[in-house]
Length: 145
Image 1: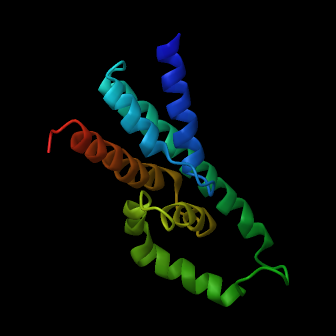
Image 2: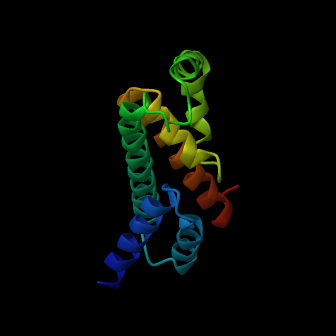
């Protein structure tokens, strides 16, 4: 049962850290790796799935925000929003490879939803970014690099 608690805790920390909450899933992953009580591949999978799911929540929130784009209080005018959408379509999709970066990564996933990034390309790029971060971190901790 303790093994399951480790996986569940890592999943929840990864999910929460992909939101705008100040959580650190990396610290928990490092602790679990060093404890050597869990399968490495399972820890990487759980952390990645939780973190990507959190990014999808941000993306969905961004998608829902667009309906308020014509409200007076919305922070971006309709022409500026259209301009941002054109820019994002040209260069923004690849910026999702930075979704793992602290501070900018989580808002980036929200903006991707706001700017109507399709789900499948979003999922692919965010999974590569977030899974890659956990893989590199694990390799450093375990002395593979």
